[in-house]
Amino acid sequence: MQNQTLIQFFHWYYNEEQNLWTKVAAEASHLKEIGITAVWLPPAYKSNNAAYDVGYAVYDLFDLGEFDQKGSVNTKHGSKDEYIKAIEALHDNGIGALADAVFNHKAGGDELEKIAVRTVNPEDRNEFTSDVFEIQAWTKFTFPGRQGKYSEFIWNHECFSGVDWAEDLQKTAIYSIQNYLGEGFEEVPSTEFGNYDYLMFNDIDYRNRAVIEELKYWGEWVVETTKVDGFRLDAVKHINPDFIVEWIDHLNQKFNREFFIVAEDWNVVDREGQLKYIEITGGRTQIFDSLLHHNFFLASKDEEFDMRTIFDGTLVQVKPDLAVTFVDNHDSQPLQALESYVDFWFRPLAYAIILLRIQGIPCLFFPDLYGGIYDDKDKEGDEVHVELVAIPAVETMSKIRTALAYGEQRDYFDHGICVGWTRAGDEEHENSGLAVLLSTGEEGFKEMEIGKHFAGKTFVDALGYREQEVIIDENGWAEFHCNAGSVSVWVLKVG
Image (cartoon, rainbow, N blue to C red):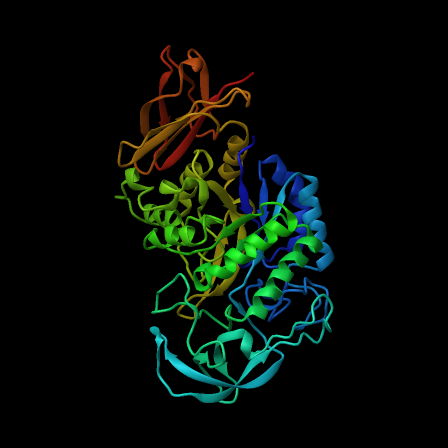
């Protein structure tokens, strides 16, 4: 069996000449070469600002770049045909495609409705701060450009639990919609702000049975239409988990298969919330290990960080079979909402940790393979120029993961600055086995055991940072080295 490796094939500011779907198709064979087994694609459906939005301001789930809506036929990423061709190209190379499903909210309603609301305290959404009053809000979605093709479902205020804009008042607030479903918000996994059901735009209400059935139908439609192999679920801590469970079970039963599902339950405080989510959803989804990302971020900023604790408090430490590990994503990249970008010097070290160990399924980030250059304003409103450079070692280590990162793992996390591990290899993968050593301070060295079956064999640094060769002794041990603030990956010398 080949190790699984994912890639997030986009970033927030993707701005290359090729639209993204065309880029995916062009790169499919290359992704296969470096060992990618599944590609996470951004939201493919029409958003509120069709030609420019990444896709998270969801307007019409059934418009994959096919209808003239919200200012464009195409989405930012391309047309429906190009999306389907991109997925076909991935499949031709034995790579799965993961669709991004945003079930928390909708944006860009087509018609105003007069609705009864109460304002809530933004710091405690369980606390009402007004009596019931009426506002006009964009809560009716008729999708005039699509004219009922694929689905005739009309969304109105009874499909939502809250909005953040009163058109008649021209005022922003958190407005709890008062309707037959209940006067407050749903119970969701996150109790931040008292109840974190409401995140943005028109908040979808899963107490409405018609909404659940429509989204189950959409799941069927999108699988049949695009042949996607799984889903990345956005913002799950803001969504009723009962719906998530029902939706996943419905698709698995409908298609008689188990789709690969990974959920974004962003948490950099404690893993109890993520473990609770796994419990209440019965382990139906993988979870992005945002806690490990946060540890990487802290380690990259703090010279005193104790590398023996790099896994402390992380999901991969206690639930490795359900953890999807990553270094950064579109939310944590510079100038984005959860900015916490791991410093460049530490990125190869972090990638070695997620790519070359047994635990977790790693997810690469597009700019680390392809780079990214963009401009945007920071929180102070100042224009900032950002250049994210590609890191060649990431591609090299991804290939090594595919070919060589197998067998028993021996850990040497016994020093605050210099840590390492070995993989003994297995019979199924020729020449497999490796040793990894990294240091966040001065040049490092460590005696590590890789196995007696390598006795007398010569190992070299596959990353090319160290020129010497290492010979394994009769007991299967050797002294491995790495440069200061660097990582070396020692593999069997062949040829």
